[in-house]
Length: 594
Image 1 (cartoon, rainbow, N blue to C red):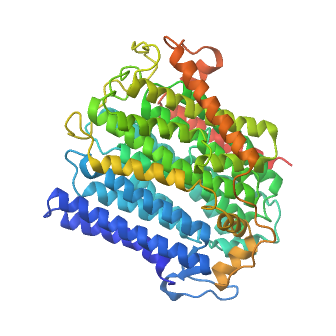
Image 2 (cartoon, helix red, strand yellow):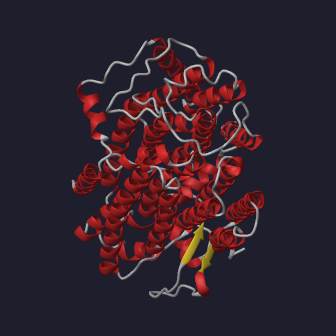
Image 3 (cartoon, rainbow, N blue to C red):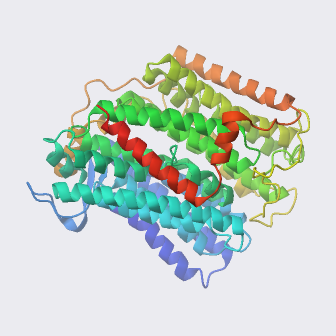
């Protein structure tokens, strides 16, 4: 049982190596089948790990270097219930992405599934490790695989530019993160999260500690695409293949928020005042939600629309963390599960549209997909779920976020984000699959990426959507609904969130492999009358947003602050780098204020 965390990381790496070797001699169907088999085994291993984590801590010290008082050597992997559930999500999305890609690509061979498996291994390691430097190593492993997956179409200039923006901005964030880790190691001589917590327990508001936390958080929040570190995400999603976007939006970006939350609760709860962390995460969350929603509503390129929606929802994940409470963490966790499933399904359906019509332009696709009625029903269903439909995981997570914030203003903001992002996606689905509303103008704006002329990744015959693609979409939507049903995610999520927010419990699990005492009052996780009412309200508002959008003949050119915001997303690396530095300074200032 103790070897399972290491096996979860090693298995996809070994599978990737096997694919690269056998891919030279095996035919394409055998390579796809082997990749799917490796992913299915990974799902089994992660589910088994979650079952074991529910019974007690599952801790692996690499090389059997057991911790000693005041001296620990070796690398530790700590699978608490929260981390174990996260790797289940990673493995599940990886399997779905590979299933969808079975008949999706024309000419890719073993290197594509091998990169996907390496990407999954990096994410699993990042979620499980209890060592700060190893977090950085796994962070880099998943980043390198992600850069390569983004630029798969290397002969396409836009693909190369998107991959370059992604790589440069994330690398700059990684350098800042590594510098912060170096500062912390020089100051404490420790890198283990639990060991660091012990050393920092007697230090409050030390300058070097605050700066180190700010730099490390910057690196993680760049990956989370939190404003103003978000500029790379839409460019990367626009050019990355659809099944890769499932992993980018579903779990890679949220992992950045998870990294900040894990680092704070495992290590910095004494060294950094809670009011400073609350202020920093709340300001960045609100900024991210507003910017992501406005930019989402300005898009007609389907994948960019979904990417900006992901940015807005990253703000909602961070909003849950900003409460610094188990209730907020439980809300973010449930919302993460629902969002990953729904957004993954939407990206896959965008990929199916690209395969059929070689376009992702909402305006030019008007009414062209009428014959794909099943796909249309699924797309509209996913849009409604994205808005927080009652008895869905997105609806439950959103309702818990609204209730955990204890603020009417923040509750209204959450509803506005859900309604705005869900509404524009619903409008796009009704236009493309049903031809509803007035025909939008198709004239191009020089400042806008429309997605009118995109290259398809597949040679799927027109009029036919392969069963593997439809199955992948159905599995994700079914998961989004099932996880939101009463009783599915209940007391277990509340107690897991309580344990996640218990620093002493984490140290006990990591260093002594003993179960921590249950938190005194795990939060109540479930539907309430108010929650159902708020979910119905956001869904109704999303439908209203969609109807208003359908009634418009053409979009007015954005003016004033909205146009300025649109122009800030210039695609220029220099601009994005300047915003990264500005954001790092803002983050440090928010932590530094008394």
